Length: 534
Image (tube, rainbow, N blue to C red; front, side, top):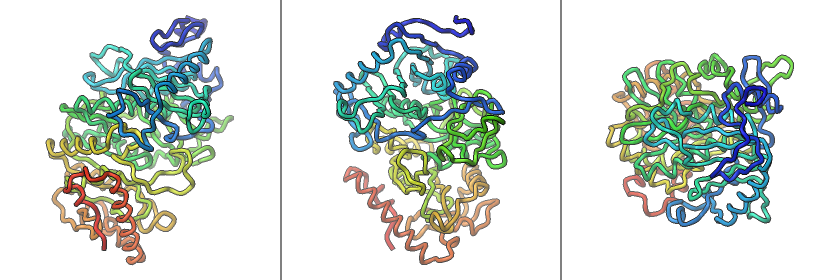
């Protein structure tokens, strides 16, 4: 040990190719990593004990800088295109070789972690970082040995995170000096030229999205909760649609807030922590998340008073994509380990920027697969680089297109099979705008959304009367306990019904145009679930 008592080793990283001399801090505890982060001037402690850090230029993911090595392993198994961009093995090897040379003699932090709480399907991930706070993030977000009983650690994949190493676009053919490259043959991920810690999390998610379907496990971008009768609910949605917020429910146990697998035995969390958005966070609206902001939590880009050490969750000085990363155990009613049974309810969360979709609607099986493949929502400013100040309507297949290496239809087929096998009911929930489009209407009241969602997953909407939306043909409940009937009527909340009809047809056309990209391979019954013209 060094004089501070830390487990610091001058040792080779073996198969990872990092050679001596290098100072390696191996599996430091949370307290040790916080101390090291402060010593290295990587962050500051807030009044409540959370570690507050900045991610520099990059305050969100860089999806256009992400690559997958195209070789014999991935040639026919990866769905190549604008999302899954190819990189040649030679280019990857060249970058890797230069990176290893760069790392010689530098301080490194290592965490041996798992992705997947079910030991039958867990992935052993060795995370090597240049910064202490990135190692701390990995320790809090991924699973450690104690969280995966019966699974001995072995290195199935390695992630090297070196923000101070940049690639050369002219030499490497990359879009910029930033690069996130996944090599499934070498079982290696390189994250370079960015400090945004979410790249680690989503890289591991990408790996599991590629590997698990071969083992008949559906990987899902969703949160999950368990009710008092062990009834399971899934919440699909992109960042900002409410996966974390709605799953932090004091009346239900949290299985996980973002990523899960659905096997023949049930669902299981991929992670050991939560990664919650913080903008506008308050104890009144989100008490469980607010109470998780304490010692052991990493806060990214949250404004901190350097003297009083108080936090300003309303400030977007650096980004709207402020984040809190904390162990799932900081949510009082979390289910650990995160392994549960089969879901009874599947909810698709969408932030509809046009104010067209109703607060909730029940979907048929065919509609479930159609809306799953569509993945409609609105990207919130700050979640990714390059977004402006306005939300942008987007279609992200399976509510997680940036992380899906395989053909999206494979994931949709697996979801449909599981819903049929386990008699799961599906709802579409609009957490976005009502009463008009963004700038005219207003964001759906979170209190009403919570009440509506609770009624749905408690089975209280299963038998209520519904009416079919004239354009989207989804079944809109006419009543919901605790919610005024007029709140359920999307059209009725607009002051100009004709303007609503125009907006509905416009959005329906967007759905139909988007779905053309799937080609003739989609089943006719799914195509027939598309919204109709008026």
